[in-house]
Picture 1 (cartoon, helix red, strand yellow):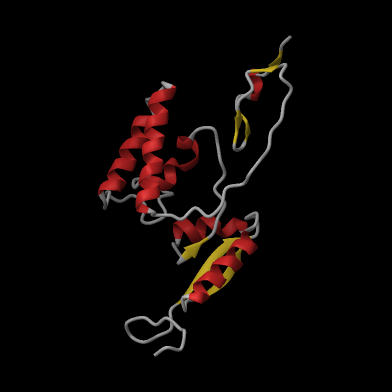
Picture 2 (cartoon, helix red, strand yellow):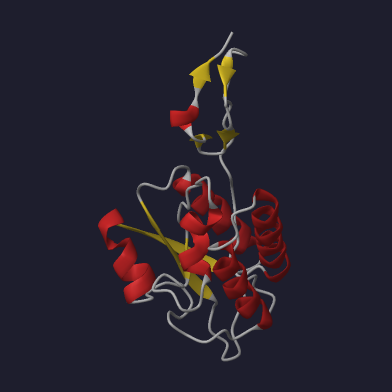
Length: 178
């Protein structure tokens, strides 16, 4: 009807609620950008901030969300960080926990994380997680909005220095050389 409001099949305005929590760095800005972008295509988005202590209940136990803006940290090992939320048999699989894979990519992701548990060679693990990243980029089951940029500097005398997006890997292995 050209009023600028997107409507569903029954003629009701399309409205969604984005839930987030107060500890999401930059969350308010990201929510505002999403709200403005959706408004441009006629979708109204409201924002509801919940307590951090309620995240598990809302996201996983009750599944009481349409859109959820959260901060996923970064760790040195993808298995430790994201395995649970992507594996269909996990408590943290946010779409429906403890289910059989519903898509070919769900099954492939399950296999990647299962194989990663026994893959100890760096190159093999890199290949597994590169494939995981390809699947997520192609299928887009979750939309990753931002990654923080960090700068890390060190003296050229520091040995075994391995920067990561979350700081320095293996800090206990660092030593000062000549």
